[in-house]
Amino acid sequence: MKLLVSAYACEPGKGSEPAVGWNWVQALVRRGYQVHVITRSNNRPPIECDAASRDPALTFHYFDLKGSALRWKHRPGGIYAYYLLWQIGAYRLAKQLHALEHFDRVHHVTFVSYRQPSFMGRLGIPFIFGPIGGGETMPAPLRRGLSFRSRLAEALRDFGGRLIACDPLMRATFSRAGLIVCTTAETMAGIPRRYRAKCIVQLAIGISESDVDSSSALTPRAESAAPQFLFVGRLLYWKGLHLVIRALPKVRRAVPDVRVKIIGTGEDRAWLIAQARDLGVTDLLEWIPSIPHDQIANEYRRSLALVFPSLHDSGGMVVLESLAAGLPVLCLDLGGPGTIATPDCASIIPTRGATEARVVRSLAEAMIRMATDPAFRARLAASAPARAKQLTWDRAADHVYASIDLPASRTTIA
Image (tube, rainbow, N blue to C red; front, top):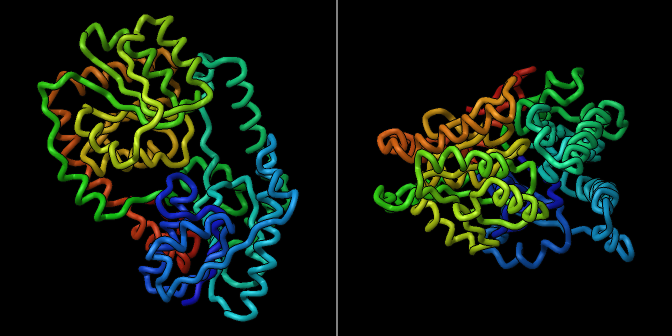
């Protein structure tokens, strides 16, 4: 089978969207497909430096807008206008390529957004749209402790999600798709009802099985070490780190020497530091802007668990990497982390109908148990790599392509 893949973001050795584009392409090649990829021109140098790009079954085609349009990306909101115009240009290139190559299917992979259209369905061949995400929403009771600016941002985000049903470009994209791949059940619920029969749920992210094998062999954490929890991610209000900070006074009463190491930067760092200062827990936190990705494994060895109470995340790659390393996770039952985690390998905090105070209390209790019950933590750690192995890039591709010919399956990930 000959596939055309649209992957605006596609780059080896990166995280987030570029990792999704690159790894889905590689998984499709491993399935035995002849894969052609349309991606941005600025991805070309790293792609061509990677040996995997020279597989004879893989061909890259590069496209970018010209002139002043390139500067739009750096203006407020400009990335969305640029992306829309890029999609139009990429479709024109795809039409030319299809006349030469006669593709069997076309697959939109990135951006992973259910708010941004793709025009690849106009090629007149079977069209897969996704994985797409963004339909995850923050429960109303968990917004009350946020700043006015953050609450306004959430309201605008919700409003944008409701506009999807009225957007003619999105309606056309959904209509032409033979299969719509949603990262979570929440995103699937945000797809207009008339199109949901052709939706499945499949995370956009995955992991290589070899990474699970090597990571799960890490030296077990010394239980005599100081009880450290780990957070890795951008310092944004919706990542939920403020909930961890608000849980710490209760945790400290039970575990006086508890510490939380925070790796990441972001626009809400000052707000988070102020939260810690007001609660008198500044001394329990260690802030590290960044460390090389290959050194994060050392932090997994030193930590009791990853705390990642994200409030609306379509993915959560750090959750998957932590499980692959045998590190248990504490998260909410929301979005990607709530989909990745299972009770066998994580403490999952329920949010349905819960106030922020209740969520913070449950998070504190989960952290205390993780620090004071070695047998419980050991059981979660032992099961974590097995869960990660269920969520490889290859299994993701297998699930999507096995679903193409299933009528109205609405299948979900394991």
